[in-house]
Image (cartoon, rainbow, N blue to C red; front, side, top):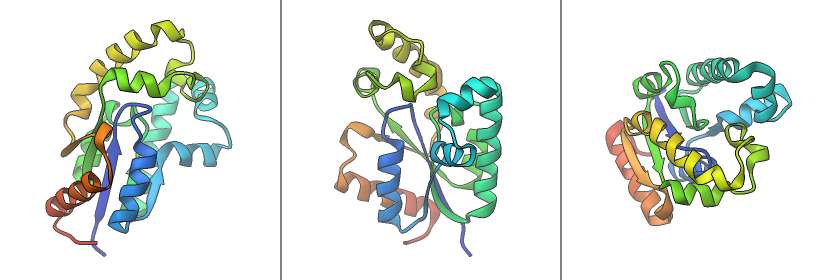
Length: 179
């Protein structure tokens, strides 16, 4: 069986799960979301996992899950957690085993999407609303060097059906396959 793996990366709130799911359907690939899979396996929220394990423990779970998914799924689109490509050798691993697509959005747009969602996002759980823009801008700047190494970068603000078809063509051209 041919290996056809796509990894969607980007900052929290950018739309990796929703856009990834739509892109997977368009490409006729199974869709997996690492955060959803971790919640299912551990029967708790990502925030609870962070609290129980600390960030290092959580990142180890993410790393192990990523490798398990690649081993088990030769054809798949995986939506990753926002920090997944920024820790350890995860980004190099994803680039070696598939095509990495970065959903990019300016900090201001991300802040709009994240407002009022701290209970679902461990990294902003203790951030006051008024401090959110500065935190997101700084944190995104720290992560951007990893995200920008993706094979394909997409402006998530304009990721409509036509743009998604164009991205599918870019991925397929890079991977040498058709759905």
